[in-house]
Structure formats: structure tokens, C-alpha cells
Image (cartoon, rainbow, N blue to C red; front, top):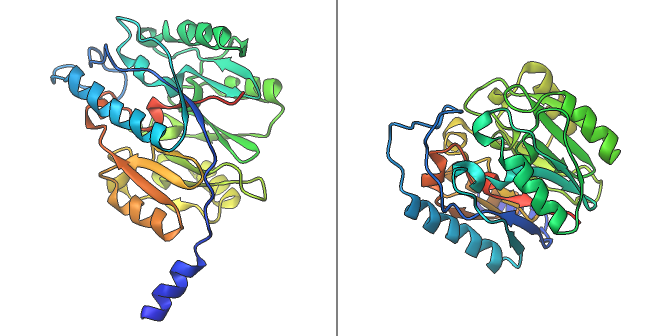
Length: 286
């Protein structure tokens, strides 16, 4: 039995970290004052100071990993602006802006596009409703694009025209996993074959989408319901280290078996707004 365990460890590939540049927004105005997803309960109190402390721990982890972390100023009256992943999608110096489904978040789109312009990105203003990296995930050479709750399928056509990449449409069916980045974690973006790899929650997708994922990523990590329920999949990887919800213990074990180095962080207060690690993280690709 010991020999089998030893050979399994030996078989895990050596993971090589790549440096990341990310955009974050300090949750100075975070609260839950409206309900636009099943996680949000305005009748329950939130603790802004705790949200800030937890966010600062995530910020510290990224800095310790050698990430370049850029910041956008929070705007009063926009409590969800901390979820910077929804602010757009960037690739090769081009930023595709967000156009939010709900009026409560609408002003975030222009705010993030202004930031992109001021920091050297060419900006493509969206026509279709989309919520940025919440529903668009770069995996290797292709873009996985979610629809079903927030981003319109028309935004996927905009992505194809703007970036000239393969864009794979995936349909979400469980309202608790309303953005693609709550149901899929990107583990590798720079694998040798250009395909990358993921972890995901099968029940979050319709049958057609599950079949596509199974075909594209036969080695994907399957995450259980318990880990998904604490937004364990809402994680961020540099191809070696994977920053995840600290309570996603099964996912953590699976990552270790694959040769990744999971790093747990407690963002329980921000979870009250329906967001986790990835929601607070917008990757900048210049």
C-alpha cells in the first residue's frame, strides 16, 4: 500500500508557477443591501471591517506569491465593486468592458473601463450584457464562456470577433452558481499542449455543456457539492499555487494529489455577497 501511495506522489507532475498581474478593489463600501443572487440576504447584518480584513489577507497572499497587484478605487454606493473579476476581460492589451445584468451594478462597467483606459488598455465597449471574467475564463488558448444567468450568448460572439480565439459556450443551470467562475476553476493556463486544465462542478451545467467539458478536459478535477457550496471553485491559480476557500478541504486534497500547492483563505464575509477568491481577482493581460 505504501508503494502505491509513493508511486502516486511520484507521478504528480512538477508544477511551475507563472507570475500574474491582477486588479483588485478594496471592499471599503461592502455590504449586502439588495438581492441579485441566492447568496445575498439583505436582512442579515454584514461586517464591512471584517470583509476588509479578509480581503487584505488575500491581497497579502498574492503579494507573497510575487504577483503584481493593481488597485481600483472603490466608489461609494457600489458595494459589489470588490468583485473585480466582473469588471471586464483582458487579453493582449485589449479590455472588453462589462455591461451588467442588474441596474444595481450598472455603474461598475464604466468605472472599470475608465480604469482600463487610464492604465494603457485599448477598451472595447460591450454591446451585449456580460459580466467579465465572472463568465469568461481563459484556459490555455481557448476562452470558456458562460451563459444562463448573467452574460448573454451574444457577448460570446463579441469575444470571438475581438480576440480571434476559440470561444466555447457553456450553459449554467443552477442559480447558486450563477457565474462560470463559481462552477469552474482554471488550474493551468500555459500547459504544453495549449489546452490547460480545470476543476468543475458537473451539476452546475446542462447536459450539452457537461459533454463538452468532459471531451475537452478528460483529466479535470471533479469537485464535490460541499466544497462547491463554499465557493471552493471560485479560486485563482498561477499554475502551481491555487488560492482557494479554506473550507474546501476535499478540493484541497485533490489539488495536492495533482501536484498543486493549495493555499486556503477565509473570505466568509464576502461570501455573503456571493463572491470568493476569483470574484475578487481580475487578471490583467497586457
